[in-house]
Length: 59
Image (cartoon, rainbow, N blue to C red; front, side, top):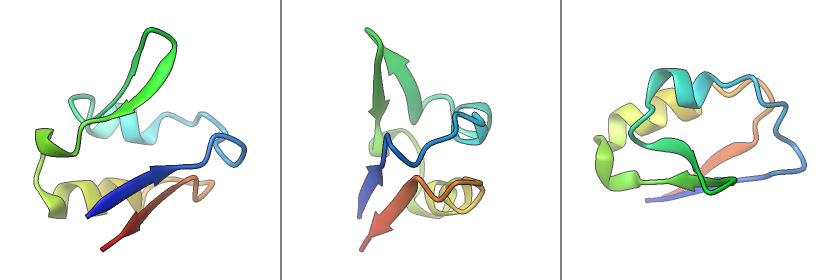
């Protein structure tokens, strides 16, 4: 599973960070996705909450 973030599309609603802070976080002013910090199902659920569609998954 490959999780992608489109910086240009993101509206910074924060749904990803609020729901899975161990996966989606900002480190040194860069957005980091640690896909090993949660199950695939959890990541897919939270990716679906993104209101702008900036987060996508390629299986």
